[in-house]
Image (cartoon, protein in one colour):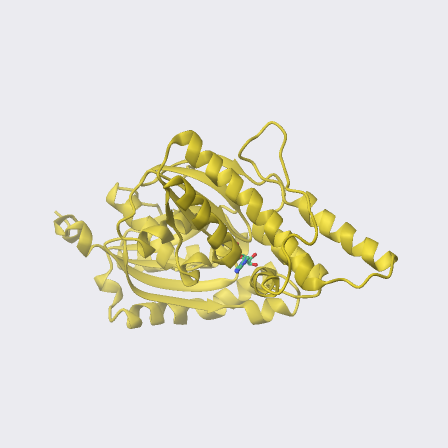
Length: 347
Ligand code: KG4
Ligand code: ZN
């Protein structure tokens, strides 16, 4: 019998690595929900110069930083590699170059030490951030994952069992925030800037359309909403009307929030669930959190949302997701590869 098999679930300790976009992150997680360290090295300053994430630069920065970040993750937890029961890593979806850096590092550590390897789905990780923030949370629940690359409305049926109810047909919610922010001169990353400036604006000032996808109650479309903001700005320019940036930001944000809340509440009602969780970078949006919380309260639905540090990309959420996979016997081989288009539920 191996050492791992003798341990109880609470003792299982996992080193997790995340590098799917522009954050190099490492974390040590014990028993799935106890975070012993959570190191995040953000590249935001570099990508801000280009108005968005440049994949080639992101890959190079991950290569430079990953060893130090992993070392720091272990030392902040007061642990050594030999204390780990598994090495977890995000292997998709995400940017292929950045994913490969994390996957290669995890495989090298696993190969050198013999510690089992567990490949983790990035979106599953975002959803699992809620388990860390709320130790009492158990499936089933509806999870709305809204980030820079993804917008998924997910039915979390059980640990590791997901059904995607809806997804974006074009831009992700965060991508729409980032593009609109650039157009109104707020810069990158747009989400937090729109969030901040919207507090001084009127969310009812401009009636931007609430994007719909015909034939689907749960899918999302944000590119039309983004285009209508661009049209509005062009019209103002042509007519020499001064643009009220806080009003445009607040009205756009309100349109996105309305759509997200309507879809999430439809799912909760239809599936008769009593818990709703938010996840992903856009889940830090103050207007979204407030609107979702009050919609949940109206229905007697329990609302969950991780703190901002667990909403944006981090490795603690990957360690948590890996724990539930590991306990179900999931192990990855040394042929684990980066899968940029990995779908939830696929291996
Ligand atoms: O989850 P995340 O760190 O990376 C991906 O997996 O994509 O999400 C980053 C996205 C960016 O688009 C950023 O603008 C958005 O999350 N974001 C926000 C806020 N904070 C981050 N969007 C709206 N309001 C915020 N407060
Ligand atoms: Zn993410």
